[in-house]
Image (cartoon, rainbow, N blue to C red; front, side):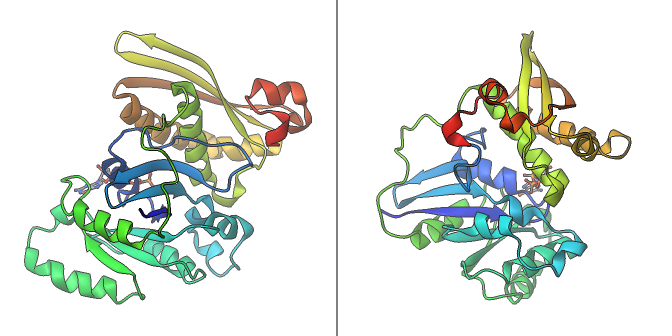
Length: 296
Ligand SMILES: Nc1nc2c(ncn2[C@@H]2O[C@H](COP(=O)(O)OP(=O)(O)OP(=O)(O)O)[C@@H](O)[C@H]2O)c(=O)[nH]1
């Protein structure tokens, strides 16, 4: 048996979530997270006869802004990389952007093997163009493997699964196959919102931030969800909300998309941000947010 941990990375919109969903064969991409106790948030587990692959999120690697480029690798990224067996770098076959370049640059800081996935090959009409493209992208660094595929059409997934499983270290499965992944839907919703905040705020994400789902109503074929993002200070609230509400709006839109994917139902999501001063010191608040003392 082989079993290991893989982090999927890449700029927004290249199809990372789509790929994860087709690989793990389930809509829920966020399954387990204990605040501050584990370095990785598990996004999904691929159970295959050849091995088990646990996909994790690496928030530190989402930082792709130019200003972050020349900065030394920060603690978040270093921590997120700890114990990962392979990095899966996903790009869109139709274009290579500065953001892809920035992700590639960040990868140069790590010794972990990197596999390249060239996604959305269904968009390449002229298949003769595929080979030169593969050669060009493959030359960008020493990749462990290069796999062209389409997450949307589920083409060449087996090729990727073979590469992944064969590269995992030998060992027992990290998770039992029948493990009930995930908590209740409210928890998953809170995690999705948290993940979107991580992506939208990059390194500005207030450390002591929590998301609480306050209302979850099933209304016909639609879910009505209200959630509050708790921060410690007014300044943090301003960051979460963004200029003219832009950040909160972006977070809400992409969170709603993922929630709908997970539940396969329409969702109306109302998000707001509130200041709860020093909530992280307050045991009562900790319990209310589902955190116990030992998890601090
Ligand atoms: N044509 C085509 N479109 C795809 C493919 N994979 C994903 N997409 C589309 O690309 C868009 C972005 O996909 P996501 O899976 O949300 O991308 P992501 O990288 O997770 O994006 P972020 O969450 O913003 O980081 C969606 O509209 C997908 O339907 C593919 O293989 N072919």
